[in-house]
Length: 315
Image (tube, rainbow, N blue to C red):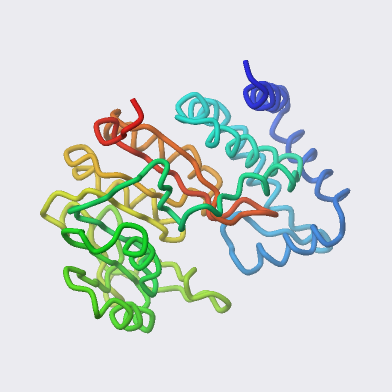
């Protein structure tokens, strides 16, 4: 057993021996004894991005600590399941760093996992070449991921489908990608069923806009299985917590086409392990990797890279 294994399983064992209330109290204690700048940064960040619960000690709001303790305790077996299935020690070190940050507020270990070698999503050690493929970009925003793909691999792609939910951003997406052919921009949300959704706008960051069910009106919601009939080779998702339902709506593509999956797994605590477990239930033929593309103080920009074994050069 190496150093990372020892640290991870020691932490997992410690967590297994705490009750949910004890874990909540432990995480709260670590927060309260941390530097003031750390406390203020987290509180302000969670006010801007309402994914993980709020913190307001003066008003007695301990939602963040309650959610974190609950999700870790109910998901601990699945966290260990994921650790065993991660395909390299970069990924295992990152999973340990995330868990240690959640529990102990460890910033230094998390910061060391940030990967600045490659553009976001496109780890050339894992994905050295992608040519003549059909790509799907969910949460395309202004086209930054599509442009990063082209900058990394060139224009030798078969087709790129870009999905965006915010109308004003969608027009910028079309403008930024207008010079490239074989790109289809779609003003649609993606989920597990057809319907319509309204867009909840984040007042500080439009890239974090989210959706809610509307019944009628708003923008169209589709499933990938129904909206794209041809086989797909790569799916990227960064859709502010809707990744789980979008994966459910892509079950046929994942089962039959075995696309490379680049999935944001940080918008909900449980996404870190629930999304790879969901993918495995659709198709067991994947290897899993984790990469950190920016989270230093708190783990954000965490990407699950799921590569079908037949497409992975690492035997």
